[in-house]
Image 1: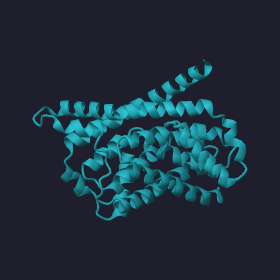
Image 2: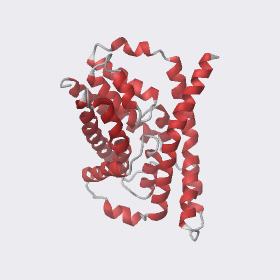
Image 3: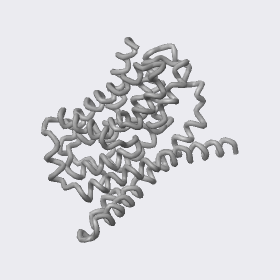
Image 4: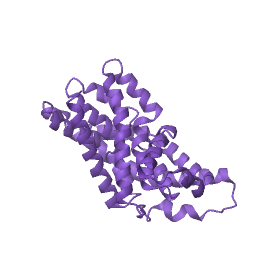
Length: 295
């Protein structure tokens, strides 16, 4: 009974911590759909993939969203004909460089380990640019949206003469309902893992830079914390793990975890999601392994 109780408590914590941000993401997505035309967005995006990805990163700062909220926004951007590299760079960067997360990272590390604050910010930008640009080349003009999702089949059939404010709330509800079922399933999986996998196992390989980076990347993926709160968990691991592995944890968690994988699979095709996840793991490992020699 204690196991079920613990799973329930953690599930509720993950779900209700994520829900407000998911609602915010759905609301921003609905505003983009209702008020911003495809033509206006396309005019703002440079054709050069690297510069386009840079615009996506900047959007991540000015459209602040955590790792739960960015998925409906990034999907809406792609539906608005925004290039994939721009949408992916935004989706990866925003949970790391938005003002709320920057502030939480600052409070967690700046007095004791300020380099982790700067490395998370700088590497978050660079890695988002790299992965966004690569995905842009791999999936240029390819259809990546999962057309079977509820939102795709219903949201485009509204009355074009209805009040735009009502349209915003209608799209918000459709976007939220489309994503929330995947969030619930992802939160359940993450809570089961948190209860059943002893954290003592994680610390077995903490003496090796390479192994500790891999372990904390997997830990970040499995534990599925919101990017607004993961800095303080990362700080608590400093006494056990290397700074390089803490950096890997701080970078990977906001970009991808179990709950977001399930949400992505519900909205994008499987090959696209698999490619994205593999790239995130590989690029973050390379960057943090190099940083481990300096930190």
